[in-house]
Each structure stands twice: as structure tokens, then as C-alpha cells.
Image (cartoon, rainbow, N blue to C red; front, side):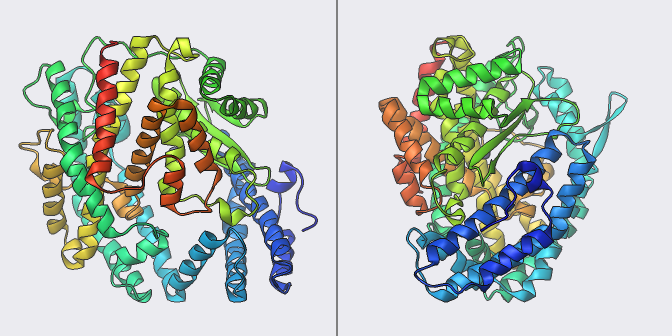
Length: 574
Ligand SMILES: [Zn+2]
């Protein structure tokens, strides 16, 4: 493959007329056993450049949202290059499948390509686009929601920041205001939901699948677990995590001096950790981005010199953008410059503990890019979501003992203990919520008639909520409680995409448990699993990392016991 752009500047200004001949060349070559390696390598070289082009364009638009040229380039890429490249990619996949060749290390990529080819229906293209439009509609409804608070018009996201404040009366008032505004759109969301269900039923039927769930299973390439496994996982969570979560709620209820924990006593107004009592100072881990970088580097070096080296090289090569400033997009991410096999990490740090956790989380994703640098073909780099988040969540936990000053980190022993308890408790509180979100969707697509009836959905959601989040008192708030499924965007916009977080969290805790026994081995196993990229199955990835891809009570109980034990130990340090 000759004449590919060799500099970042040349790459971001690449045009489709310059790209297309490379695809045509690959499509025209005859594919034999003898030249498979060369053909796949050339496809990879081209694919890497395109992936990196997209990454560099998104980085350019997010590090400076006022950069009009970057915006224009991104739009051109999305409108022109992306759809054309996707169509050409599809032809190359079909060519490889038709050749019946089975290149070494391609079992999983071929399995995925076959499934995608089987699922593809021309007749679904317009329906999938319709579904996309409904998703935009959903964003519009929520994006338009504002309220008047203390004389000013503010967004609900801003209003929700009040849930972190110690003034309970103010919290309750803000919570009701938010709920009222959301309930005003109840009809709109219900009618949108019926349209979603209608489109999804048609998509499944066109693809000859018994339901949209079966369609999604293949589309998400879920070959290593079944809907029944997800239900077992939810049952295990109900049995062992719900009681643990209820204990956490109770402990905080007592600390706050309350008889009942109401939704406005939680920082998200819903299910997550309770508002801290008055008088607890906020953690202030760093005063400058330099300090964030140097201490994060010290933490990684303390864990493993290679990980420390990866992080330092990112900083040295300008592959991080960590500070918050005007004209920078919100949020955090890690992306990959695939042709040079280097990551890029984006954070909006302002000096909070959350910034430390986020930087370590994204660094975990970045380590995945470093560890897979030697994998030859681009198709082998696609890591399933269930494991991609093990790299990042696992790193958060692996790094957590090094948060103290004596290990190079940011905090005194007591401060680190506080941050770590909050983190572990947050993980425990997440599992029941995740299980409710997942079970709700199984019910919806198993009972499409009731699933398309908003009233029946309300009833089902309320029932799941009472089962999975019994530790929070919703008395008198029944209508608001029942419409909770409206506010979980995944249910509407990315159906079934949620259990992945629950599974990854389980893997992360297992790695953390191994590190308590033998830190060196746990980190080595973690790195080895990362280095496999997307070349093996999920159970193999978990096993290599020293964990078990499991859905049973014993596996979940082990994880919860471990977390509770660590929390008890840490509590002694406060
Ligand atoms: Zn992540």
C-alpha cells in the first residue's frame, strides 16, 4: 500500500478521491492463500489511517470547539468519507468471507463478520436511520428542559448539582422542580417510545429474528452469553448485592440523622451515593495540571514501571489534554491513533477527586492501546465492550492503594480511605440499578404488546424498582418513580447496552481481589489480557486477566464480600 498520508496534517486533509483507489485496489486483487497476509496487511494499513483520521478530527473538534476548520473537516468526513468507506469495507469483508480462507488469529474477526453479513438486510437501512432520528428526538425533548431557579433559567443538569448540597429543604425543592419539569414531557416520551417499539419490531422481522432482543444480540456480537445468563446475573445481584446496597443506604441515613432516605438525599436524585453530611471538606488532590500529571505518573510507576513508562511517553508526546478551559468539549475519553498505535487521552480536570479517578480510568483505556500495539491486523483490535471497560475500571481499582502520598499519590491515609470507600460503595449501588435497567428491557422485548404500552411499562419499572432499590423511600412519589424508565437514555437510544458495565465491573473487582493477594502477578495478568485485543472470546479474556466471566451467585458474592471487606478495613483509617 503506497502513497498513504505520512503526516497528521496530510491525514486530516485526506479526500475520498484520494482514498477510493486504495479500496478499489484491494477489491480488485485476487485473494489466495499465498497472498492473504499481504492483502490483510494492506487492508490494515488503510483501515488504520482512516481510523486515525477520524480520531484526529474528533480530537481537533473537542480540544477547540471554536475551531471552524476542524468542524468543517469533521462534517466532510462524516458526510462523504465515512459512508463511502463503510460500503467499501463491507465489500472487502464479503470478499474475505467468500474466499473461505481462515487466516491464523482470525477466528473471532471471521465469526463477527459472518454474523454481521447474516444480519444485514437492505430493507433495514431506512428503518435504522428512522431509529437514529427517534434517538435525536429523545435528546431534543430532554435538551429543551429548563426550570426557573432563584430567578434564573437553568438546565436540569445544573439544577441537579444542588443534590450535593447539605441543605435538605433546598434539595427537596430542587428535586420536585426537576421531577415536575420531566413529568410535563411524559406524553411526549410515551409517544416516542411507541414509535421506537414500532420501528424495532419491523427491524427484527426484516432480519428474520423472533424479537428485537434476538436481533440486538447478534448486532452486539454477544456470542459468549445469553439472555438467560443476564437474568441469572440479575438474580444473583438481587440476592447478594441488594442487601449490601441497602446496608450502605442505611449507614448514610444514620450519618445524616434521618428516619428515611429520600431520593433528594442522593447525589443523583435517584439511586447513587447519598449526599455527604455537612462539614466534610471536599478533597483537593491537585492545584495544577502538572501536579495531576506528575502524581498520576508516580502512581503508575509505583504499580509497574512499564505502565509508568506508557503514561510518561503519552505526556511527553503531547498525547494528553487534561485541563478544563474555554472552548473545550465537556467529558472525558480515550481514543486511538491507530496507524501509530498510540492513544490520546482527553479530560476536563478542575482539581477534584473525580478528575483523578477519570484520568486513571482513561489511562486504563490508553494502556489497552499500548498493549495491543504489536497485534498485526486491525480486525483483531476490536475489543468487546464487556472487556474494554475492565481495562479502565480495573485500573481504577488497581491504582487505588497508591492514591496515598507515601505511594506517590495525592492524599493522606484518611483522605484516600474516604475516596476509596466512596468508589467501592458507588460500584455496589450501581449493580442493582443496572440489573433493573437490563431486566426491564428483557421484559419489554419478550412482551412486545405490553412493552409498547407505556402504562404497562410504568407498572413493570415500578415493580423492578421496589425489588432492586428498596433502600430508598419513594412514598408519595409513585408516579415519578414509575416513569423512571423514561429517564434512562440507554433504554431508548442504545437498547440493551448496559449489562456490559455490570460485567466489566465484576471483572475489575476480580482483578482487584487478585492484586490484594499478589499485586505483581495481578498487574502482569491484567496486561497480558489487554495484549490479546479482540483475538479471543470474552471468557478467555476474563480468564487471562485472572477472573471469571460468570453470572452466578457465588461469583457475584465473592466480589461483594471482597468489596465490603476492603471498605471495613478502610473505615478504620478515617
Ligand atoms: Zn471507559
